Amino acid sequence: MTAAVAEVFRRRAEPAAALADAAGAIAAACHAMAARFHRGGRLLTFGTGAAATDAQHVAVEFVHPVIVGKRALPALSLTGDVATLTGVCADAGFDDVFAHQVRCFGGPDDIALGISPDGRCGSVRRALECARELGMLTVALAGGDPGALAGAVDHLVTVPSDDPRVVKEVHVTAYHVLWELVHVFLEQPAVLDQEVTA
Image (cartoon, rainbow, N blue to C red; front, top):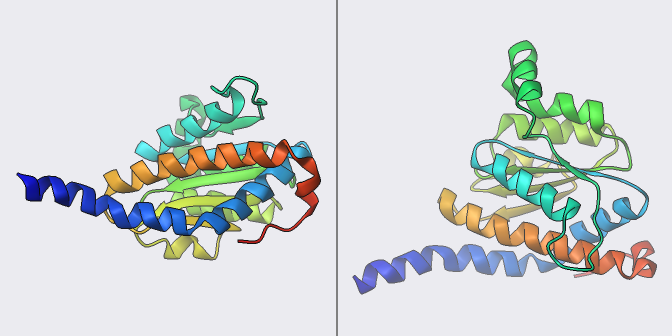
């Protein structure tokens, strides 16, 4: 029994350490996000399956902060409107389900945040590519092999694990850190014009 318990924790040790090692990259993403919010930009979030609920979680954290005194920021999850999702899927196919909405709602001051637990979600990749074409800031949380996303985003946070449970756990921590650091930067607007270094 002790070996089984140790294995559960061992599977999480490296991915958690990798998140800590990515502190500089995460800070840079947060700085860039804060700069967009400071200019009046909005956050669009998206993901499929369990990542769809993560996208909704991210959006509500920004729109309705649970920490008293923190500023509400404009964010919209593209996963919550069933009529739009099914309508786009029926006409354009599943791979365009988020890209279609990014084209409708996104602009050059906005932020697109895609979540792909295995790094291979076609609809997330397509939406991020579309967002980049529009001049949006692009951020992705990925797991497994994020090769398909590597060239498609400005900021990529990868969880080095093929276990979807571990990836989700680390993603939850990552997007709470994103939320918190965005607010840290917004509370010190003078730093928004400065470059972030690791």
